[in-house]
Length: 201
Ligand SMILES: N[C@@H](CCC(=O)N[C@@H](CS)C(=O)NCC(=O)O)C(=O)O
Image 1 (spheres, helix red, strand yellow):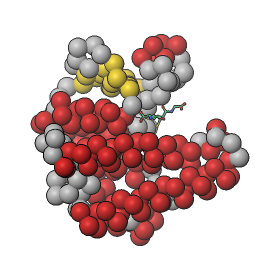
Image 2 (cartoon, protein in one colour):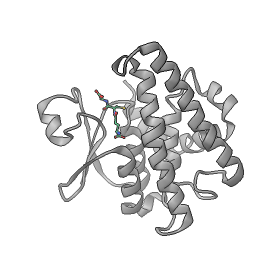
Image 3 (tube, rainbow, N blue to C red):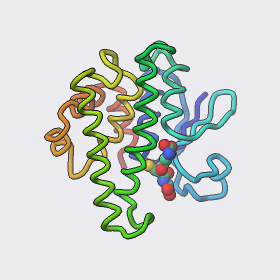
């Protein structure tokens, strides 16, 4: 069985969505303290999510989990065929979302950890919009999904990150209507509602 270590409303949401969408049984462990010694044994970086695979191997980094589970759980229907141009796009977007957008979001919400908080936060906000702008432009040319015609794990990951947009989804939709359309599609799925209920405080 898979074991997912997460925190309510955190980066574990998109991974939990894939597990739900595939209909596999899994154990959810809510981590109270990511820096506690017991959890550092699971993820020495002290971050959620972390995922224990059925064979016992533990992996961390959410985008890697998304790519891995999309392939390991074909029932989720969330990956283009490996080796195709669409699969290349899925990996491209997952890495950009993780290394670029997610990291900028962390700078936005936890700006005091990174230096002069006000300027870190406003630059992070600009970078988030710049990256969403890149996606919006490509979606206009190649959409409606990040990999083209087929929904994938990259759209789920985008949906999780977009759901953290400030001040709200209406503001996101005014600037990035195609990203909002992806969010609406994923958020309409039963698995998203199940995950949201599980993540409610
Ligand atoms: N690159 C990591 C980032 C994970 C991350 O920063 N998670 C946040 C929650 S959204 C966290 O655990 N923060 C704990 C902390 O930094 O104290 C991933 O994608 O898994």
